[in-house]
Image (tube, rainbow, N blue to C red; front, side, top):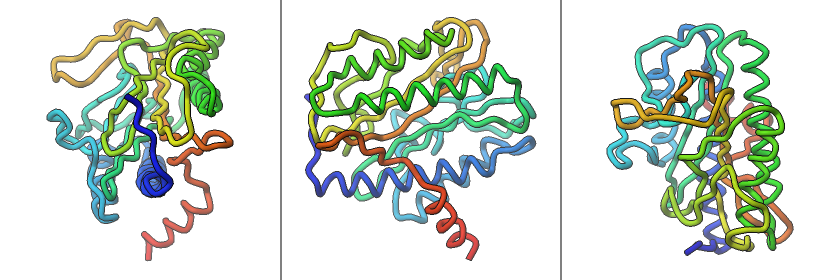
Length: 262
């Protein structure tokens, strides 16, 4: 059952989404060759806890870190480590923050230094898929419309979409109904209503869609070893259309940086 959110609940989700978005953007600024993903994890946990929140991922079904950090062919759920990022890598960071009982969930794929044009294009198309999917989060549309928006654009651009992992409803729990695959038929599944909140997260691969999980039980990689990109926003459905709760403007980010530096 999809759990609609009241105006009061949406305000709380706006706050948790904003925090997750701020953490994502601060981590983006830290990414460069030589930085370790464990350093990013430490910084994320510090920011989240200092804001009076908790990292949603840490301890979730035993996951041991505050962020997921997935490099190159790693699709999702990568473990932060002491391995340094290298020039030309792409890094997907997934951040979850629970504030006042509500979860904000967001992800982005970041170039490490200068990257190849084909990797840059992969990231750009993933972001376009996310934009097109968000545009479907309107009253009267169907969940299948979101899925189709991702699949249609990714495949038209020559990429494949990951089948085993999906977007989802979100609220007091990180994963609520409905499941939102990145492939499907338009006009199918649940009708979208005001007050619904979704975590929309395209995962697209440069090669084929097949994935496997590494022996750590978490890290998912492409079977063919080709790069993957993952992007995500928490999106509320308003009467007039989508409200992106994890979107952070440049001006807000500058204000927060000033506060952090002070």
